[in-house]
Image (tube, rainbow over all chains, first blue to last red; front, side):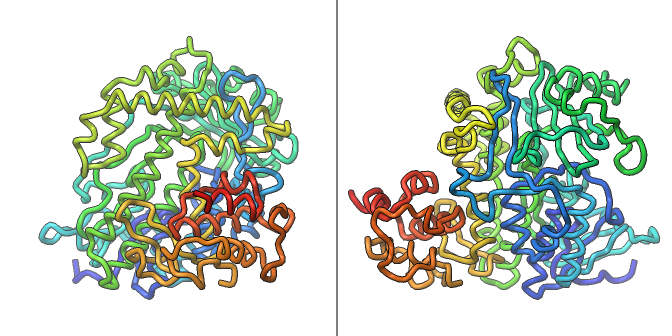
Length: 499
Length: 86
């Protein structure tokens, strides 16, 4: 191999996490190369977005108009047939009809189009985008990651060198090991998803027609995502003990699950499954939740699914991807400018990222714990009171990372009690809010007041606010932590950043 | 940005009744001293983003508050009472 080509930053992976990080680093004038193993547009699962991505990060990327013009289905929240009530209830992004505003909706997107828009946008911002270029290995020099070996479109091995590598290569990438940690899975959220696409299907009444619908049934739950008038994504999330059944007959398992779930069965009616082209296959994914014990090491940062993944019921995949891309860009920019040490800058990255993962983890544990028909195995296995001590300790490790192993050894009972109480609060808030299509169901006050929901919304609200209204002084999120600079692309010590 | 209520105030200066009213008028684009104490701010153009901006600005000035609390009673009088009466 010839001498390595040199850049300031190498980003591995062209999904939303990688495109976000690459764009915001290139915006500061750094030389950024992005390696993507496929040629875009390419298929991807994870179609339901949250407002923080659309109005916060995409605005910062300068891609919001293009996203707006792409004609994606607007989503004002999620509708859930979940818990004891037979009627669906809403989790809307707006607090109330009176207090909506520009950021009270997100989109359902076909990821081929959405991801392609973000990747082309990165190229327009100066990122050297190389498709059909698969990263093979990290290059390490003296305990520091200093480059990447990749295979170019002709299959030739090439080497790149850079001050920093950002691994956004997803759940199947190989580079994450170079950060020196291990990937820990959560037993509590070990599910399998089997899914396909239908040529239309019914819609919920307006204004909820664009909502994602998540509907529980005895053996798991189904998603129903209205992507376009003539395209609906439908998937069944089942216990991992169904693996053999799914493997034997994917399509049969999907259809049987739909038949077990009245609301989805009725919406689909006799709509046919698409059997040709990109959307023509019934696919299977493990959607096990996991997190790496290390999110960074000298010279390398993990973002998106390369770092962690959490159960998809609340549409968090692209949010955690773009959010971590934003955090990583701020840290890389701060270090490249010589303004902060790697420890300080990436400590903030990891602290904020783990906090966001943790608040969703706790929210989702509470959400799965909501009263269902508990005699069924799927739901019984997801009661937090039945969470094994091992699981609780695993949670503490997932959330804390390698930095505070002692928290994993104490307080398992306290954590279980906290999860149970969060679940009771959430159940109560849902009951008080009431069904969708009622006045109280249009008002999210009760839900947003539940502490576990408030925690989930707080940082997302800040990201949206910044995207929509521009810079303003922010208090640090973490004790002793940093704040974003005015342009949102790096960190500053609090009190030193002009608003 | 003209909508930025913190643009003319450094952090940690604390929140006063005068600043609270001025910040509200600024995010709404209203001239000074034109808001009634008890005007429903939702009727004067307050939306979620403007409300989040106020929360952010006041929190960075050291005031403990949140979006839901302010949204429940959206008047200058109520916010003055909630945030400044100790």
